[in-house]
Amino acid sequence: MESVRTMIRGTDPIGYYGVIAAFLQVDYEPRLHEIKTPAVYLGGAQDQVGGPPDILIRLSGKLPGAKYVPVAEASHIANLQNPAGFNAALGAFLRGYAG
Image 1 (spheres, rainbow, N blue to C red):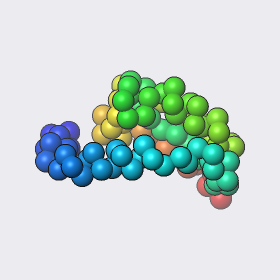
Image 2: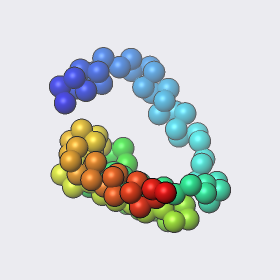
Image 3: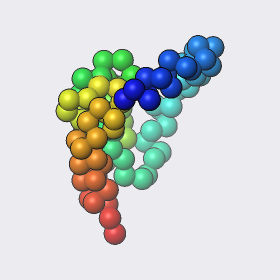
Image 4: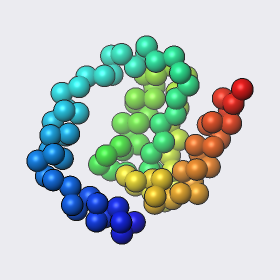
């Protein structure tokens, strides 16, 4: 986690705000129904900023066949905050679609 903290703290604020501005201008929700590939929304159950559960639940409802799987004991960087929980959820999803 310390290396991630260092990387985030070293991020140029102008670049970071530019990414936020770009995300705020993209309206992708009306086209989610066009995605035909199986999908899962994995997010930290305690994420309150980057991908809160209520938003991921709402988005998964707009994508046919998608579901939201919360990763316990994690917030925004779920794959690092709870690697075992994240990997178990992702593995279950992938095994469900393995040919």
